[in-house]
Length: 145
Image (cartoon, rainbow, N blue to C red; front, top):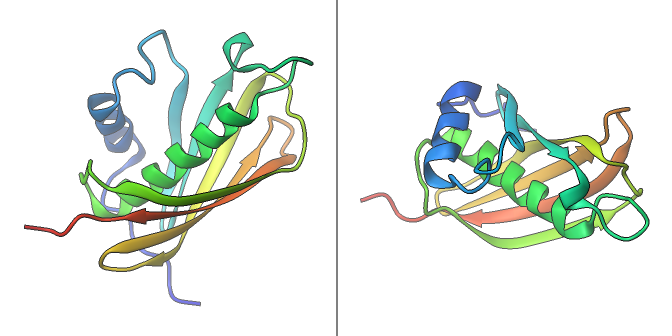
């Protein structure tokens, strides 16, 4: 396996940039935070509350899908820099458990960083560390001018 890619943005820089390009994420108060950036990976936390629940009181699938997509976007930006127009080309998710409201951590890892495509792996864990969903995502990187 190749050596992990070194990040070009810190957690604070990445959080500031996400706030800049997606101000709606935290517009109603703190919802998403970047908790860690390390070589080849990031951790993004969602504080799931009543807005994110489905009938039965568990965090909804669309909420976890959004977290997986944001986690992939975050790990990519942390490693290639401010490229706001990187876009999802594919995202596959498997829901493994029904998480309760509370913090969910998406640990996104770069599997392959190419010139035009990036493939990522995202593990979503609940506050007890249980794996509740697993996703893979591919992003397209626009050509550098």
